[in-house]
Image 1: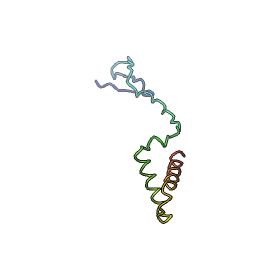
Image 2: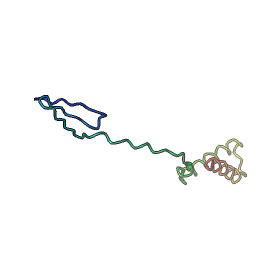
Image 3: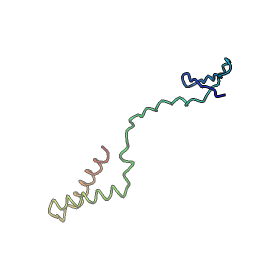
Length: 95
């Protein structure tokens, strides 16, 4: 005959036979308790880690050209303009 199952708190199942008054208790698998999610701490991101030497050089070169162009292409200030571009780009990276 068919057995009727009665569930209590989803951890134990009690089976009752229709012809007998004998109760059998079996343990069923329950879902494993969930682990609490790990707290994510806001770590400081190192902005310098994503900058490669090639990328920094490209930014300095582009900035120096822009400054040189803005000063109407002076012939005698190329080194000063380069140093200014270097300072601006590196200060942006270090923020």
